[in-house]
Structures are given as structure tokens and as C-alpha cells.
Length: 571
Image 1 (cartoon, rainbow, N blue to C red):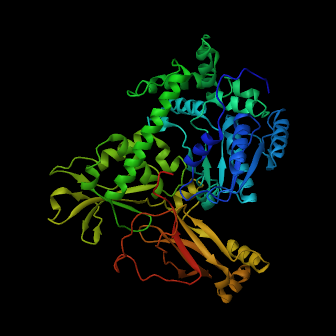
Image 2 (image 1 turned 180 degrees about the vertical axis):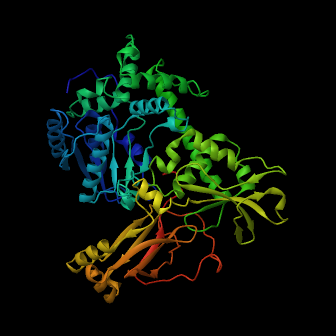
Image 3 (image 1 turned 90 degrees about the horizontal axis):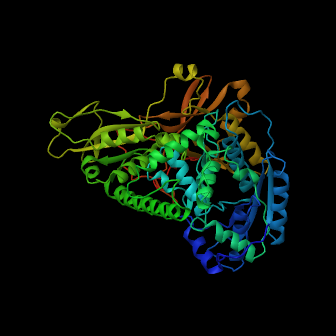
């Protein structure tokens, strides 16, 4: 680490205590927290600050910190950086874990190395968290990273809400869809958190903190090579502007990066309230992204309020709202954010993935907004529609405690006490033939035989007494192995002889899960009762009681619990 004159104030213990408390997860801090430690100045500073903060006993804060490093094995310096990270953690008595990525398969031609490495890095960090029972991971991102992220999103045509950048606290999420049809992290990702305590701190103050406390760090040389990534190119342009140096001519950069930088300037001009451009100084960009972040927080608060006032009791896995209540929401940003919140909650894509947000495509979100907030006339015809995220929007007529779902809603047919509304639900899947043609798995049909047999055998050998399956990325099915009927497990253990299968299938137009035993191809439902009381911060939307003609009498096995697990919250 090169020494430099101390021109910026280091981060004090009291300052960091406030920063740390501001990014507390909604349910409070877990017992263990990890720090993603690359060996660079940002993560080294963060590990030092968290270790110092946790040295003072407080039952409401994490009780132990871990240092987690990923060795990509993609460049000669990576192993040395991992070793430095380990030595640095040991200096403070912090337990350290290095995960080395083994690249067993060659990269797909044209696949960006940065994106592949990022996916592998997060997978390795998640596995290390599992190994050490860590439920929150801290990253050393700072305000200058936030500026780069904001500009990158503008380069991809993002709205002002997307340009707000990273959150100081967010749920890890389920990740992306794998080839098997399952999500990367499953339900476990819904109970883990990413926090960024330094998100409002400048890089200069981080470096000053390192120098004041004699924290040694290493620097990744690829961070300053503009040809490698869009982020590096943006970083290079900002640095050149700060030093009054001529910016690099665009033709010397890769064509894709050139196109993105041009899109950045075009999109930035659409932000009428906040200037964001590569021509601005770093101080102006920091101020701009702070304003955008505060605007996004204000929109989140307004969406929270709108959801409480406009949502109606409904079936699990759906969202019901009256048209009158929707029309009270006038701000376009709040409308778009509300639609995104509902999509993410109801979608059968993994929670937190781009697909669950309809790819965050502006045209998809605008189409939904246009349909939901259409001005009714005597000639209005409302029909069900989809616009991404596997969510079906259907117009409904609400009469007392019942809802009607006609194929078309004509405004004049409404009776005096009728209420017009919309219900968002999981869209119907492709039929079996189309799924086979496209080599797509049927996420509504799961053979759980091996899952149950393996879990039962582990339990008999001292393993956990319960096992869980995430169904359609929407419901969690938990199985109590201690209450599992002996005749059933005996049949499953001999399934290769008696052709018995334990299947998870769907029922009703809302695609609720049910547990079915198949013997020689003959199905019998064992369980389909839904557990409807929220038990934690992952709270579902309000409930509507089932009517006899809507859902048949439910079957309760006594050893299966089915819960809706997707939150409607911003985090």
C-alpha cells in the first residue's frame, strides 16, 4: 500500500455505528455476519470497521464476523490476493474462509467473462455462508461505486428508479433459473441479506481510514483497464474528467461499450430533475445519485402506503385490487413501482430475478400501467392480459365476499353494488407438448420420490427431522419425517419394484400445490391444505376465505405444511 498525504477524514467509530445500524435487515441482525473480503481497500476497511464495532457487546447486533474470499483463479494475482485476505483477517483474529473456483467447463463463445465470474463468485460466497451459518453478508461498496452503478444502469436505458443504484440492505433472493427449472439459491436465499454500510462514504475517506489504522491492502490491476468492462470504462471516464485529462476517444473502445456510453448520455438527458452525465464532476455525480436514491426511497414508502390502502383480501398467490383504489394513485413513478412490486410477488420466476420483474423492460411495465389505469367509458372492454413475469392480469367483478372472473368485463353490465377490480395471478403454463418442443421443465410437476427417500435415510442416521421443497418458486412444502406414515415410506423405498412415486402437482386455477402418491399410475391426493397464517417478516398479501364452490374440502395429511413465501415488500 502506497503512503499518501492524509487529506480526507477517516471514518470514526461513532460514524460507522450509525452507518451499520442504518442497514439493519428488517427482522434484525442475525448472529453471524460475513464480509466479502477481496483484499482491496474497500473490503479491508469494512472488515476492520465491523470487527471494531462488534468488539463492544450488544445483544441486538451480530455476535461474530467472518471473512469470506473467493479465488477466481482467472489471473496470476488472484491466489496472492486470497492469501493476503487470509493474513489480514488473521491479524484481527477473524475466522477466514477462501473458496477457490474450479473451472471445469470452458466458457461459451461470446459469453462475457465478468458476468460468468460474478455468478460463480456469488455462488461460492453463498456456499461459504451456508457452511458457517451466516445469514448476512457485508460488501464494501461506497458512493463512488454507487455512481458507477447508476451510470451503468442509465447506459442500459434504465428509468430514474433503476438509476438510484444499490440498496444499503436487500434480500439475497432466489437467484436465476437453472437448466433444471429450479432457482439457484431457492428458499434459503429469501432468508439471507446483503448489506452495504459504506454506501454513502467516498473512496477517499476509505483510503484515509486504511492509512490512519495502518490497514494494508492490494489493488486489482484489471479495475482500471477500460477495455475490459463497461464499469471500467465509466470509471476511466470519471477519473479522466476529475484530472482534467482528455477522455479516451470512443473509437478506441470496444463497439459494445461505445454504444452503451452513447445510450448513457441519451438516457441521462431524460432525467429532468437530476443531472447525471460523464461530463459532470465526481462531486456533482455523487450529489445526483444521492438525490436519485432518496427519490427511490420516497417512492418505496408511497408504494407501501398504497398497497395497504388498495389491496383486498384474496387467495394465496394472488393480488386483488379495486379499480377505484388504483385510480387514486396518480404519480407515474409510484404506478410503475407498484406494478413491479406486484409482479415480483406473484411471479413464478425466482424472487429477485430480472424475469420476475418482467425483465425490467420499460415497454412491459408501461403496458401494464396503461391497462390498469385505463379511463373507463361506456364502451370499455376489459380482458385478461399478460406482459411478462408469468403474471396474468384479469379484470374481476367484486360482489360482497365473492369475485366473478368473466372472460370480458363490459363497463355498463356492472350492478349498483359491484366493484370493478383486477386480480394478478400466476399465468397458465405452456402445455406439455410445447414444453417438450422447447426442452423446458414443467415446474408445476415435481417427482419428489428421491428427495423424500434421501431425506428419510439421512434422518434415520441422525440427520434433520424435516425436509423442504420449493414449489414453482412460490410455495414452500415442508415434510415432517417423524410423522411420515410407515406404509408410505416403505412403498417409496421399494419404488423400483412397485412403481410408486410421490408427486407434487398443481390444483385450481391459482395453481396451488398438492402432494400426490402414484401407484401404478393411479394418483391419490395425500395433502393439499394451505397454511395461511403469516409467521415471519415474509408476509403474504391479505387473505380471502375460500368458498365451497371455489375450492373443494382440503386434505390435511398431518405431516405436510404448505406456505406461500413470496413477500410484497420492497426488500
